[in-house]
Each structure stands twice: as structure tokens, then as C-alpha cells.
Image 1 (cartoon, rainbow, N blue to C red):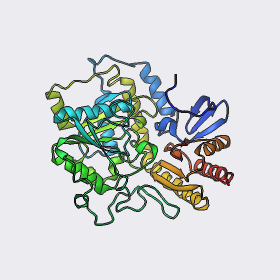
Image 2: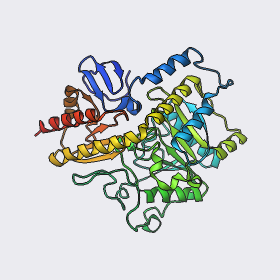
Image 3: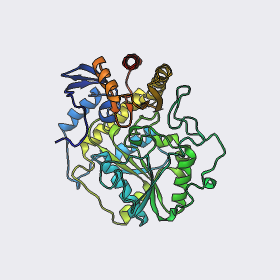
Image 4: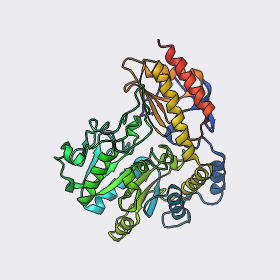
Length: 414
């Protein structure tokens, strides 16, 4: 049983290495989606595969009463690598949705409040309590579509004459406090402001810093917490280690996120997720007697894999390289968009990039044409886009090959 949408024609995967997936029907494909947005270092990375074999031979899984060095070491190494602005404790789980759900639940228990503030462009997970439409008894989903371009040219995406580079610096004097759009909100009722910094269900919509600063500040001043969902945006995907690091105010100790949910890139395709909690809040949770356990909490295999991924990312400087590659991808996409009326705009930040199509242009037809040319991407016929979350390790030659193929496929639509 498959409870998700997929193309009507089969694409059978046989093996994968690096940026490539070998298929039965189309031969070798360059994977422009990093698996399900998770394989930031590409498929079957040799160092990760080696560690899997080593760990399987020693310690695969334990009861929660046992302890190993790996969870604590993983938090330390990740904090150092990403230069996290505060000291965190962590728990390691199995899925991104679970991590977000736990982070949200902890914010409720720590504050004694039930309602959460969120943006309507935010995707939080597949769990019933997180997915759209969220229960308005417990969630306020703000319609922020009118705010996305406030003070920032092209926040919603590049038009055919400009490029988005992920900038979140405010460039005009408009003020969220005096704007009046959110004067009706009672901020004292919120357990947390739950923020996703840029994925937006794959649309790469990046809210302006002034709005995020305003909402987070109001919630915190009223006794709530800041929860950041980095399941998709983490591990170099946005050109920084984490998406929240594009928002300057979060990069100092006093304003750092209270809880951070991680997934996808944390395991480079292996199913591990995490909740990082500011150390003072973690201590408070333990003193309050808050308890949470599941079958694979802090499993040594997943934690060991994640430690190796962090090591590889640091040694290879893959976050910086991904930032540079992402800029190059967008420059090529902008050149194509300027010459083709079928393309409406480009959304992008780091290695998260989306080609938005004009109404009536078939995303499915472009997707199928790219398959035939040797490239796998994501697409939505309903929303009209081609989706590109390529791995950080993709080469300039592979980017050029994809962009040339995309231009040829679009030209055939004329």
C-alpha cells in the first residue's frame, strides 16, 4: 500500500552512489532531490557506509536503560561544527515528524499552555497534530502571504531580472509593531512560536527577518518559547548549517532557539531525527518529571552515523561549497528563465531551489522529459513547479548538464 502520490509510470531504483541512482527504465539518473531531500552528502557515502558496518558489528540497538557515549558526543560535535549560539541537550529519535511533534509537546509542558503560533506557509510534519489543516483550537496559522515581500525584493522568489540570495536583512522602515496586521493576537496564550525557516512544503518561501523577529519576540515576552523546525532546512541545505542562522537575531545566546527539531540530513538518508533543547529547559523538563521514550531513542547506530556525517561535512567544508553551488544553480536557472516565457520565477536559498512555471505549463511533462535526459527532480502539477534539492556534493558539470537539459525540454514546449 502506498499512501502518497507518485508518477503513473514506474521508476525502479536498482542501486545508488553519490549523486547517481541507477534505474531499470531510464538507466543512470543524476538525483537532483537527494533522495527524499535527505542525502545531503549523496547516496551511499563511503565513510558513512564504513561506519555502518563497524557499528553493526559492535552495538546496533539498546534498551533505553543502557547508555553509550554517542548521544552526548553527537550533541557536542554538532554544536561545535554548527557554532550553535547556546548550550543544548538532545534526544535522538527516528523521524522528522516525531521530532517536531516532541518539540511542540515539550513547549506545551514547559509553559503550561496549549496553543501554538505558526505561519500558514509552514510545513511541520505528517502527524495528525502537525499537518494541514491544523486544529485552530490549538494552532493559530497566520496568513503571512502579504508579508513575504515586505522590505525585501524577491523574498518569494526571483523574477526574470533579479536573483534571490537568501538575504533576510530588512531594507525599509516598515515596522511589524505599527503595521497593525497582527494587533488582534493575544500573545500570552501561546506555548510557542513554531518556525520553519524556508522550506514551506518545498516552495522555499523565506519570511522576512522583521516579521520573524517580531513574532518570536512577542511570544517570548509573554512567556512562550521559540521552536524551530530544521528537519528539511538543516545540515547545509540553506547555505548555512541551519536555516535559522539566516536570521541574525537568533545567532546570539539570549535569542537562540529554545528547541530545534532535526531530521533528514542528520542521517544522510538513515532514519534518525533529534530534538535539541536549551540546557536550562532540558534541566527544567527533567525536574518536572516529563518523560518520553520510544523503541529507538538514542540508538547507537543512528547516533554513530550522524557523528560521521558531521565529521565529513566539516572536513569537506560542504556547507560553504553548497552555498556557492546554490548561487551558481540559481544563476543558471535565471538565465534560462529570462529566455523562456514558460518560467514564472525562481525560488531559492542555498541548495533549495524551485522553478515556478506559468499557469498552463505542465510540470509533469518537464519532469518526464528530464527523466529521458538522465535527470531526476521533483515536481508538482497542482502547484506548477519543478523541485531541485540537489546534494551538496553535486559538481558544476552536473549542474550544467541538468540546466542544459532543462532548457532543451522547456524549448520543446514552445
